[in-house]
Image 1 (cartoon, helix red, strand yellow):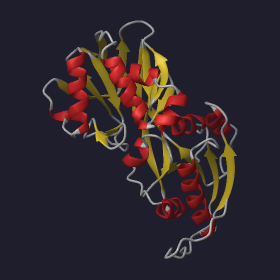
Image 2 (cartoon, rainbow, N blue to C red):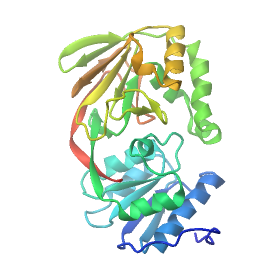
Image 3 (cartoon, helix red, strand yellow):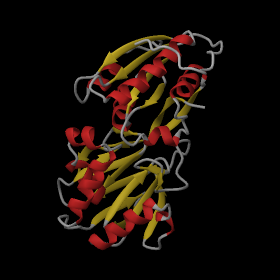
Image 4 (cartoon, one colour):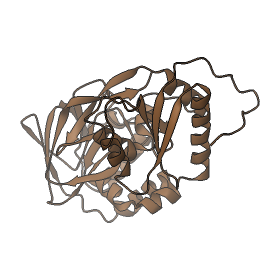
Length: 304
């Protein structure tokens, strides 16, 4: 995995040695593989010990983490996106091993939320020296999620994006399916109970952080250090409303609309058409009805 140093590169500073398990997808594109190699080279220069484990299918990362014992590594590094990080978080619940991110996913929402650097050398420097910090999570029917969960239009878009389409088109896969579903989705109403109070909406996103789909702001006051979940209720139904919401998200003003309510809560129940998909961290995680709570336990993340 060794690459020659780039001209003008900075010498690696002295740093205490850490041992990492790196979980990665061997079928990632050339640019992502190159990025990963640069991060790994820097970690090695910093004196870190790195063990690689490759995934072959969904669920592998979670199983790898379930097999670990406390103290096996100083951190598990995920070279992937939010879905793979989600697997690691759920697999590590029995340990105190922190999770670190090598952002090679499609949206990298959690990496944005943690304000991680983008250059590979800077990512490695941070992972080698950062103090683990506590991060709160949500729980959907007993399964943790990190960034968000949702039902309605966005969950149907997630359900329509196949792994092959996401690999080939990346973020454009979601744009393509959003445009397709805009004219096919029937926009049913959803019922939401937040800490015992009933609400209805055309679509709902439960945010644990303030970013959505990258560096787009959905719930501006939501923070990973905040134990509350922020429930975004999209009140208007129909394709025009869905298109308008998407546009306002892109220009950073979604939360300023009067037909969107953002409510804090720790116990949320979602219902609607039976069997409707519910997404969490960009993957389908269940089907209506579901029960979502602010998870009692937190997890450790390697971040500044």
